[in-house]
Image 1 (spheres, one colour):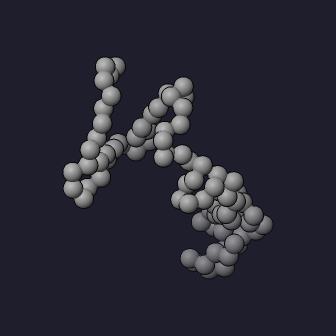
Image 2: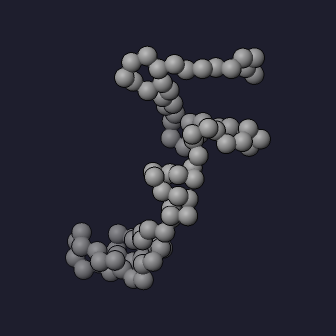
Image 3: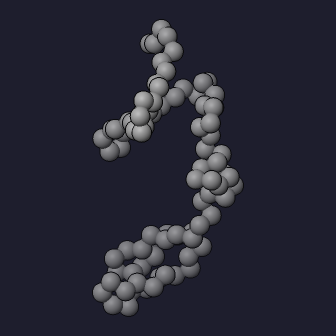
Length: 86
């Protein structure tokens, strides 16, 4: 448990903080009671409001061309090696 506030001050062109973890590990975890971090809100992710995220068309297609699942995709089919129409 930290007994003082930690502050990172960037000195130069590199990032002030870089978190490197192995695959399937959380790079950062904050307790829910901490609230929202200033200027770190997922409500504006990549310049989009949260209501604009997740509506893009996408699909998961097997190598044989059959549709596994998708958002807004009706069908898929394999016509030749490496040629799948969605």
